[in-house]
Length: 121
Image (cartoon, rainbow, N blue to C red; front, side, top):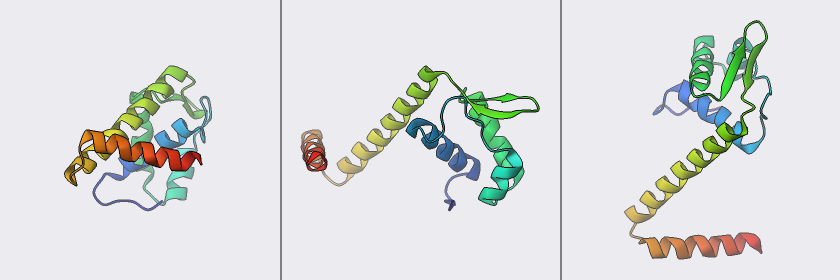
């Protein structure tokens, strides 16, 4: 993973894990890599992974079983809410950027509709 200097590394790792959860790459109940394994894999300090896991736990996306590891929540509503929140953030950013370059809402809807039509062919 290549990290962006504009965002703390632990947040970038959180976003990676969140994306893997909502895409189904990591399923509810799955065990995450240990702090040590994940830090080796990403070549980051173990404290960074520990902070990532703590923040994900605070958000209710993972839970820790002492001596067993960190696991993804099995609460489908929490995962669905995360997916909707992520989609909302993407759409909001997209619309803001489109308006910055001069498109109005009607134009944006038309462009998106055309792209979807192309994808379905």
